[in-house]
Image (cartoon, rainbow, N blue to C red; front, side, top):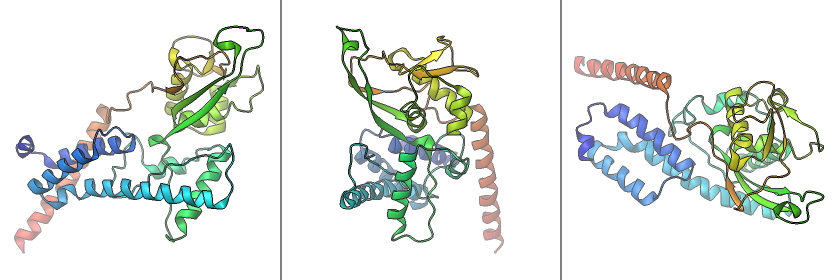
Length: 301
């Protein structure tokens, strides 16, 4: 707080703090909500309500989303449709003005949703089910699904390899994979793929409509990184995925741990690159113009 008093561009500090806080909250990387709220309370005492109202709104959304997730789970249990393939949903409903539009660093939620991302049928059914539940008491609202900031836990079975009589490959192996939403969409394509068949980069993009950059990053983490190579890539190089590469399920995958977190090739913790930083500076400058105009009008009155 003492350092913050000497920051001349407090509006720019607010923008960056909002982006970093959003990432910590959505990816459960905040070590303590109590410390986060204490910091916001101190900023509020120092700089006023206007400076922190978006931060407080974000915490309110997270709290309400947790309650909504519990209510939806209770609703689903009441339907009596539970099965082994039941998908558990943990949802975050983000209020429009509280959260930065560029949490992913590149695009807004609505642009992603309207791009026509092809979710697997079981996920699409889940989305429709939640929307019906959400709309019961909230008429006229629209939900845009933000695939760039989601993740999924997938229970994956790797069957034993015929002819193997010892070692991990001689028996079925079950792992729980934590992947990005894009990684989940890609992996579910291989559920019904016949043994010996491959899907090319172009096939996967045509079936999923995942933006090419995100698709390449997701496939590289699933097929190139040694510890998380659940897909085989052809040609089997260590280079990043490129056009023409083909993929299939890696039946011989083994791991010493049951729970495996898939890393990402690009640095997800990095909020901006140079181009995006310039865009932030330009937006800040535009906002300041309106503040200056308002101050001039107030003085003239």
